[in-house]
Length: 154
View 1 (tube, rainbow, N blue to C red):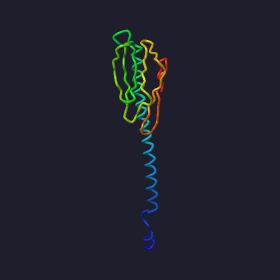
View 2 (spheres, rainbow, N blue to C red):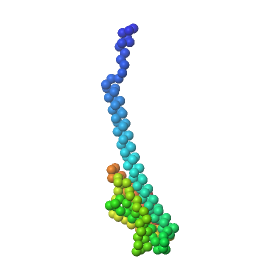
View 3 (cartoon, rainbow, N blue to C red):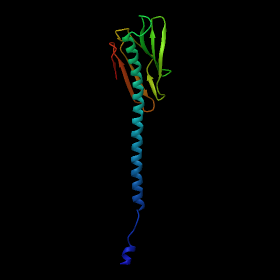
View 4 (cartoon, rainbow, N blue to C red):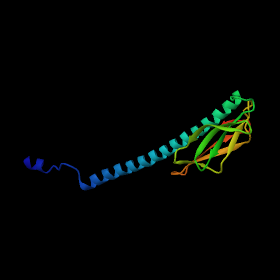
């Protein structure tokens, strides 16, 4: 009876330990990749929301006729080199900057500088346009479109 108890082995073999460590490594790597992708998308979604907010602010100001004169148009200007969206108002000769929104460094505006003007009271846009944002690390892109009717779409 005593010999039988001594033959029972306790613990894990080297092979079993390596298999468990490998499984943990694979799960950790997959989690890291998924987390990085989700974080990239969240940064891009946040930048897209900033652009939409700037457009909605300019459109709202144009629709309500905010300004000291009756000839103010409100708009948004993209600055590709500075990675900024600028809200402004203009009476044709004088342009006043209302607010600058700088996008996160990992997100860039693709294309050339654009200016979107919303006409006073009608809030229609000067032209249809699309603002394209790109996350520079993951290469993911997203767009914000503005129709001539002033409708802003994701």
